[in-house]
Length: 484
Image (cartoon, rainbow, N blue to C red; front, side):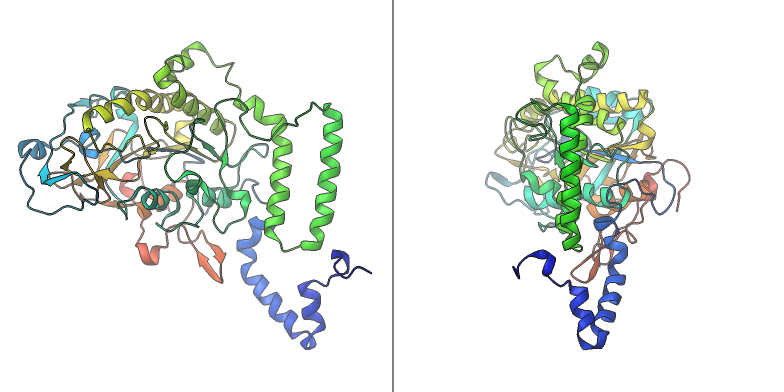
């Protein structure tokens, strides 16, 4: 007899029952019961649709990560006092860690602002398309993050803390709500096919959750999902038989490792891949989109085509029941294209020319299809920029203040929330932390950020860790009476 054969191994439960008059088994059962609710999604219904803690307007999220840190005072938050005192040394020493500082000298924005929409929202003239949806968006001018480095701030924006190894926002939402389409991943990542932005895959990790909740990369160039189709064509009926046999063998093998969540996740991922062979191609095929839609997203313009494709694909995925879609910006001229260290004017002009039209197109398209009310669109960088000069015409990173856009999902439309100080250095009025943002997003999906827990190392983890972060739901951002 091969003593290492799994069929002859004793399970932990059997060992505990045999030893210590069964008291070990009682302890095991008590421990297992305490984690059963958190393990439900690991070993039970996985990504099947689930209800939240209370009724809410939104059921999906599209997160448009603007890697690099868009400058708030150059794009969304006009500061006349900054212009008035251009070139003067600021009395308060600002946090500047990179070379090129000009002795704390204030730098006026080199870009012009104008009022957009019936609401009169002020944004830069180089954002005419986002300006055209001013009456549909909520502009938050009082955001702040926790670190001045790209990676730490990006990780915090996506996972709640600056430390790597935690589940991403999309993972938490997938874990809590599952997905409405069992033939597609719950959490999809759309990056530039030419490469990764700063911090790469750190932004969509499952952390200590099962791999089932990790973001799935889908390409907008070539084969959408890598390794999905067989290298040699297989007749559909033969493939179905092959997959049915594989599923049977996988489940038989799994019975020997009942509590191995990583094995369960691998099996579920293979089963999902099998279903995607039939469903993904149709969902991600953009050939039947109308000429008007292609023009809306800028697909026929070299500057906007790449980002436009990702935005359009995000709409199709949400339309097909995907719960969370993460869109990454272009990787040219560099992997963090909003990082205007050298010239706030030319660098912002370059990236706005590529991202402005597709960003607005997504909001317009969702609205005209009746999807915006149930979809949260989040447009945000990881931090903002400093009001002082770097390299003469550029700006360094600023964790103390940045602006972001929210649209749909029950957020106020045509609304500006909060304010920074007179030069845009710090969030000053109605401030919103990254943890507050996460709590608010979860709320609009029907989830209480304090009740959404996952047992890890014997403790109940949450996305916001409110006892430390002080996270709160920012109800002032909601359209209509507050819920829950």
